Image (cartoon, rainbow, N blue to C red; front, side, top):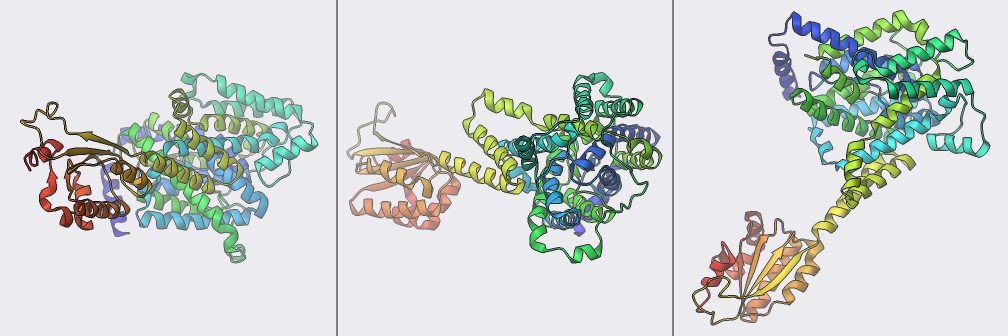
Length: 541
């Protein structure tokens, strides 16, 4: 804890060293730009989370002030995200908002503990196809979850799949005005010029235009509704509600929220850090996210994570320090007080359109295309399995399944041990004379462990000579099962009068052989730099 505080103070000093009016102006303009991007997304993600637009706006504001101030980097912008809605919608639908808030609080505690115990780097052990898979799975869930709002109908079910299935089963008559507004927003966001988007985000322009059209023509569509001009929502977590919570109900959702927050925030920090040339303190970022999610439920906000879209906009807009995030929060707060009457008239279908486009853009298309073009079957399998598991089950289960499947593929791959037995060729090795003893060199390539023991035993059974040289340059790793087998093998060969030598052995492998007692059996002088040296030492024996 002391280490984190010390690093935080040092980073703040470095971040604001030489900070002046020019840097403040850049942060101010960057903060306004990010707020323009964040406003429609906050409203959309609030609704998409199973709460309401006000909850999304409160989340964005509190996150901007609290998480930005404590963040592990100067550039992180946090708030409600589309990925999180995939967890929150079924949770809110099945158990209610109080359970959602309680799970967020518990997830915040988990994130703080993860940061204090230096678990920030664990996320980098996730294979990239697994990350792409659950990202695409989340995108599918978000898109399916907005079908009802897009069509202007109310769907029943505990999750997106159940709602869409019920719609298909009983059939629905869409509100054509809602559908038209949603499609209008989707098309406008897709066609919005990139150059203009640098000044006015396409999502903001689409939502404003759709709202104006809806108001002018008085279209019969469902709107967002009243947005309270307060940071303390009427629907928020209270200590009374918290005391009634059943731990077994909130535990798994809390783990899912914490895991997703960890993955999104740290991957965002890594990608954005490369853009700005600044390294993020992963452990402090987890603590910051934990503190934010710990307090948000008491204001009525939904869980928050770092958002790569808003963070990249901040950096491209000239972000100089964490003040960009704080200024963004101030702009959003002013918007709440000044623009609430206008925001309350935003059609739900317009926000559904924003989420549909966001879901499409969430997919890591470049990574997916790379896997398919190069026909990496293992990577494609990891991607598809993780994506399907995310959609059909749960994010946490999907990650576990994806990682376990990746480990299984890796184990199968490294279990492919290559062993070849070569007779002594004096001419090829440029040796001075023929050996008086029969010498064979056994070349072993691959990891030697419990999974490849059968191949090792089969390969060594092919060797039959007076002197056996085990060349192990291609062996990066050997486990206890393998050294136990080699120990018995060396003893067996010695009993037959066969000399066993080792060549080209890696230091870590040599250490394992020493510890297993193999060196005591064959002798410390039985190790050679290469096979040729071993052969020369036994030519005339």
